[in-house]
Image (cartoon, rainbow, N blue to C red; front, top):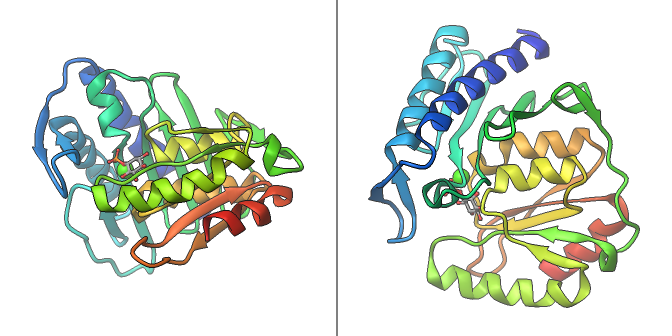
Length: 251
Ligand code: IPD
Ligand code: CA
């Protein structure tokens, strides 16, 4: 399958889920909690993932699938889809306008779709990153002190203590910090130049699979961060001039 076909499948899946989420935005309730009492799931998460898996089963039946809300499905093609049907679930449930659908065919194609703004961030491995078809190319600031840095926090209180220590090192050195509540949208917005950099440890592959590719194709340095002590692996995305300084503070 060509990259263009994979991108078309990702787009159909993300737009289908996005339409369904839009209908429910503002009226959704917590259905259950997962890893901790603050890690919530709603009917909307489940319905959106079902819709994405239906598109993938129809259009890419030989491919493996990993999704936040369902079991891993094996495949025979060597390709794997990594799906977050609703990234920013807490925002969604509070009626805050920072949430998105993330659909990636690992390393090959990815989209982050923001239904409220009808913004589709997309990339393929051998093409440019785009926002609604317009090419994204980031230059970014030349030093961390000028950079608006996004990050996020996990749901486990013990992990948050460690994440707070890291952010306390970054905050005095950056222009400022943003915690938007959706890792996928954070990455997409870095690619669009609305934020300058992003880092977070303790995320899951579905939070970042599409956003990493979009940032890389927009010209950003994108790295996986190794675990440090009790903090798991993470992701850093930053302009080349800022990546080294940020890496040194979060490592
Ligand atoms: C979360 C968001 C958040 C990030 C967390 C993720 P969810 O995903 O991306 O910004 O800080 O690490 O778990 O729970 O809203 O799908
Ligand atoms: Ca997520």
